[in-house]
Length: 296
Image (cartoon, rainbow, N blue to C red):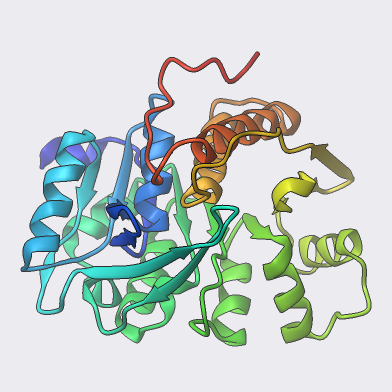
């Protein structure tokens, strides 16, 4: 373990689960998907969650090892997370997310704390904060990070597993918000900015929470990156969609990797769009993207 403390990891923190799709189960969960896509660009990435002492947990460990993804996922007395995923005709998923599972109970261990104290970036969402145990671990992790750690809140609203308080606290804690157009409507309702158009809602959130960037994805209608006095728009490429599972996570992961490499917002944005479009053409959330030319 000695070398894990010295490396500066880019961390995905939160739910580790299996997406049970019509054609079979695929390992996923936003944090693992994020860490995997960051690792594809040569960064030391790590997924932090919890797994059950069960078949799914064993399978997750095996698959993470096969993907050569670093992880800290203690075994806890709850079943490994699963999600029933139904796809519509366009390959767009709806999720039935099981409750009282391992990733609801991520412990803040000394090993996790050591990674936090040296983290280069961390991505977290709202879903893993639905239960107090994991919510507290995420809060402690964020508080333990160094000043230069880039904190990304990939909001990932799912079902009814979020509250206004958790979202507000997360916005206050992060540097970058990643959100999609449907989630933006929900946030507008929740926080009482229903009258504003999309762009003005984004500028308002950016300023109110003193964010470095706000990334807004609008599916086939393109995506935006807002930063103080700056906006980037990139159209979504037309591709043959297999499924969109994990596409948003691949966007966040490749965008983060580009920013950490020192690329400007426009370059990072273009890369993220290309990667996520490619992920849509592949089944599941973690296809290999190594060797693909994304910065041309």
